Length: 138
Image (cartoon, rainbow, N blue to C red; front, side, top):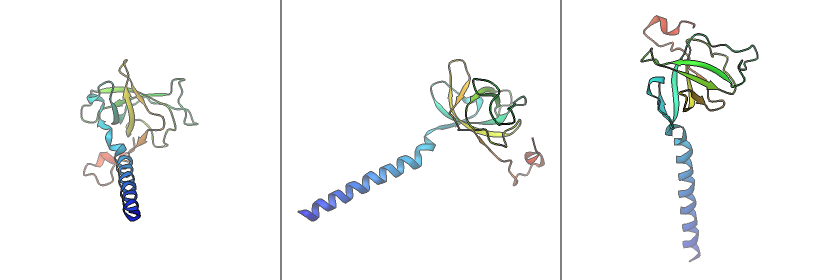
């Protein structure tokens, strides 16, 4: 009887730990990747696009406005589609105009993308691209 109880406890613990592992490993994939032309309200997205010219930050890396760093993100596949992004948190050194980024957040009622704090990631230009202009500094 005692060995049966140990077996049940061990199996229960294994199921709980396996469930926790699956939940934590799949947590980031539960968000939808999208470009500025594919956004809808009330959904959390991992937004991918290119920073439009005109973005500025002070030398300390902090946003120049009280509401956070505000910049425009262009859709890579549909260049005419853009969205204004409001971001709070640390800004990577590689963040600049024409750089591809990924940021997590949601669209608000005014049509602006409100990013989660510290969710901004800059992507490096591919050094394995066939096109010579893909790795040009921007």
